[in-house]
Image 1 (tube, rainbow, N blue to C red):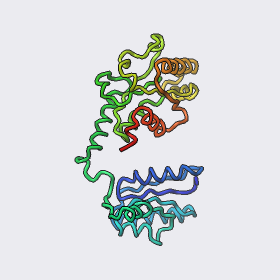
Image 2: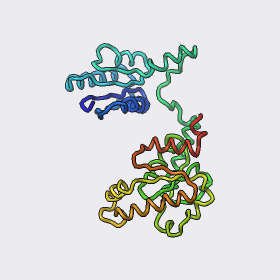
Image 3: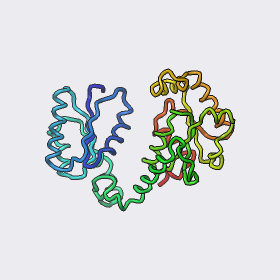
Image 4: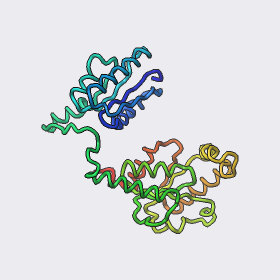
Length: 274
């Protein structure tokens, strides 16, 4: 696997091919080299990418793996043809064509996810959610928290910001995040600005040893990054969330995707049905 190259070839951004391909590759040990080739929407571009794939096959002595999402039949036939020295996995022929038969209709064969973003309500909702999450990052603003779908709590560097942005970008969730600081622990209660929105709160915690590593990268040798301080902050934050009845999970060994899905399941299960 480490010596194999995987191509993600698409006539759009390639994000769908890459996301699907990575979920399949995650079942195998090792990390191959990834190459994304988006906007392959002409015969000339298809021939060029086939040439690149074949060069890699010759250089590595092993067939590359190629995940494709190509709508145009002429372009697709070039990449899937016998001249391509690779294992080509065609998502459209694997999934779209059987669905066409099942539904008894032809698909739109549309290139890309958003053919006209100006007409997409979902797209505008996601942009609005991203702007909201940026404005409410790290407790910058307590204004308009009533509009938040989720408020993430946790000590500094526990993963609140990337989770907030992922929820906004992928799910259109307006996610604010608020850092718990030593002054909150001394008061022994949830920050007053958050008290009315307790039911929207979800906590992130982290292993103190991992937290001190992360903080040392930001402020090496500081009290902020000291292991005993990290242990204190994490312990106090978890105790506060237990007292307040706020659900929480550890981000130590979980991906952003897993964290976000858990939050949606617990706080906004309606967003898992659409």
